[in-house]
Length: 66
Image (tube, rainbow, N blue to C red; front, side, top):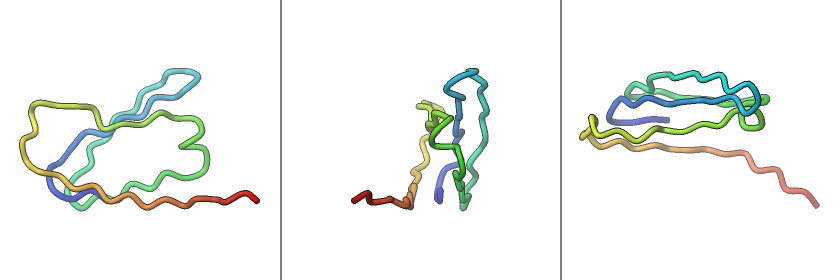
């Protein structure tokens, strides 16, 4: 969940290098499921244009292997 300043979020496919950029607006909720974590690199690229604070809340599911 993204709160505060609007920011660009980038995905890049690990194999074919396809790139997808989306804008995370204030209050956005981004859910990455299925093969997203496995097949895509993701980041919030650095920028000098945004000076407004931003808070990011990240929720993860962790599978414990025994």
